[in-house]
Length: 147
Length: 226
Image (tube, rainbow over all chains, first blue to last red; front, top):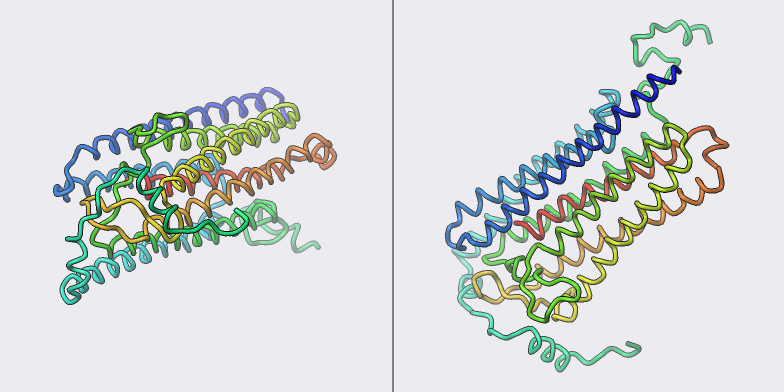
């Protein structure tokens, strides 16, 4: 192989690595900014929180794409290889929709028909600082032998 | 055979060449990673299902708010875990550079970048060990959860069970990745790849290492951010 084209290729690959590193860093920082912003959104503003979570998930998927496509070189593989790994993974679309729907439906059913479950969310946890909690656990649970 | 050698060059499945244009071991690494993705996916979907079926869930910003050498009542949510995330991204970058150096048969660069990757992996594991220890001293473990739900009601132990199981499973992957990278480093130093004439093994180890980083992207988002 010609030496100069080899060097060119290497330089190009280095450029690509730098670019993808930059993108991953920026995306992570944006995610963190959204995370910090979400801390100030009150719990009862559910739709706003869900919206922010959706944006964070989009950034997460974008990061996953860049890692797989460039760091793992998937983008430069033969199309058939991409398909044999990507097509089975599309099952996840169905898994996620079906299971989250199921979980939500179970919550609603129990909220409607299970009084105990419904009342549970009204029971407030006792407010205590973490050191009291530790003392309590140590008092309740005897140390297992050999520890 | 004459039939294979005369197959048209544009036909991928005409025979005489690898239709996926990739070495057997690397192809199988891809399929292993795909199956591993299903394992992690099953864990995370199970976590999501339980979270959707619960009326309340602890606020991650109130649970993960400390960092090493911090004052006892430190309140710095997201800070420590972002450091962990960046450590893993940087170690992924050094792994790419090791693979790249392997392509060009630059043994010295491979060794340097592999060592950096191993250091990154160990740093991540140390961070996770500290975090687990810290949560344990706060009273969290499998089967016990000292953290109330975000609305102040009593939480079940689902939160800690899923947290320790999934981050533990991911941490175990990081650990095996570090071991694999150490084996790669030893093989590089003993000139095994120089003798073979290629560094394809590093590429396979690299695929595994990037997958570990990829899983962390999902774990980080699901447990700490949302």
